Image (cartoon, rainbow, N blue to C red):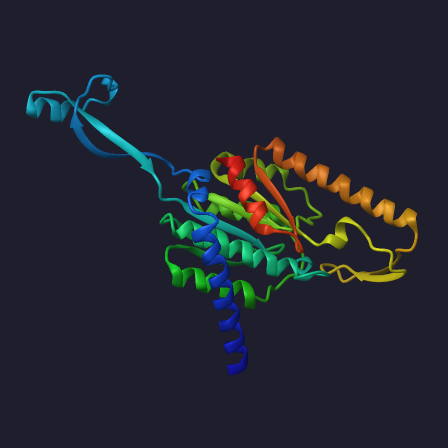
Length: 291
């Protein structure tokens, strides 16, 4: 038991060192520009200057000092950031550098450390086809380390996926507007278009797809036995067949077109990254687009 605890602690520390450095160095300023605060908050009053909007005049202060004063506003920076993390069975899959779950942990940690540098709160919803765990939004390094630990050592009850249920739960739990990152491979047999529409009307939503390269293009390795991680159904695929590989690639492209259209239709930013890809580049592109 002690060995397992030590291993988890070491993994958490390695992830912290890597992602905290990225947040401080590579994403400095980009996160701030990409995710604005809730609006403008009152900061102070000062004497009226030529060109000031007369609608900003504070009439109470003006009457007290017998000369015009205006209210000064500044951007209200503090945000609540929610990470909706898919923990279904398909996220444990990985054929290259790492599993989809491991990639999700790195990206979530990077976003979390970027957020606390801007004094934002971070909360997490782990979901499968049910809500597996809810971590209320808080600030601070200890809170993020707790989140990373949970992502590394979490064992979900279910292996299936229901993204719509996670979006509905966010709407119930988060009454005030927040920025929500939905991190998943988006293998969901249910349609979540309606839930995404409702969630997008209340919150700032970003979709982050994490996929394995094998799902995009099959290698020619002969007869391949595969098992659905969510249904545990097994089947064989003859990857030596060009027709099979071509059909698999066609299915992938159609699925990606459908997914992109869904997010575009609902005005939701969307980024896609492979487990052997550069997630730093993907996040920077997303930040740049939003900025």
